Image (cartoon, rainbow, N blue to C red; front, side, top):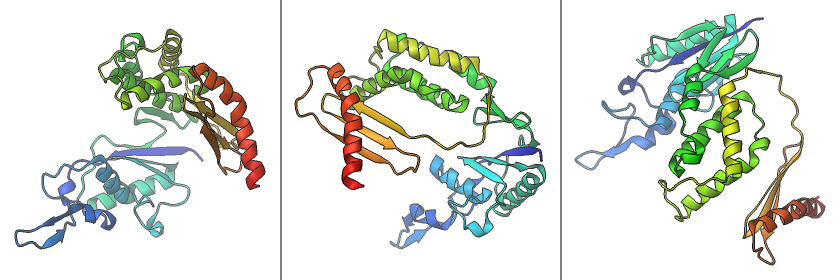
Length: 300
């Protein structure tokens, strides 16, 4: 059966929307006489945070994280919420019925839905991701591709610009299913610069100063995003086991993720501190598997 989806967005009429009971404690205040009161609706003019908007929208869309499962959508209907955006996907008939239910929920809470909603579409854009249910494929929206081209070059960015650019690159890579292992050293170089920022060694306005090899890998990731090759959605496959390792001048660590999902973690400080980070990374490659297997031998 052909699949379709609807995309809705909630407008800012939140002063008339009832707050979910589990969030009302966040809106307590004292009256002039000292009485503590708990609001059941957002006060007029109150600027709700994105977290509160997400909860309100989820309640209207009947997402089971905030609403009792008894009222949830049918099993074959998938409902996604991001802040004030709602996506409903499933068979044409199921999707149409649940969209009508969501609109009734919004109307009953006196919340207004956007006029430009898409109903029963087989191709549409949601949060920068273009879905095509006819071919079961996804790609980036034209707007997102333009934003990638407009991002500053990595070799001339400061740290703040680098963080924004790389965050966007990684989000788009996830949409396109890009293998990030090919860009490992670029991501690691970025992480080191952000670590220096967190420790106060550099400022947000300091030059990113990424190594030329890392810049090349990063710009290669930009080109992959710009090429925007459509990714076919495949049925979920069983994940294979993986070992993720890392090292610094202070110690090494490793995470082992087996097929069962029972994650194992190993790591320790160096007995003799390495002089160069390259020495630490070389030792990590040997010690990480040894540490993991020692953990398995002790606890299993």
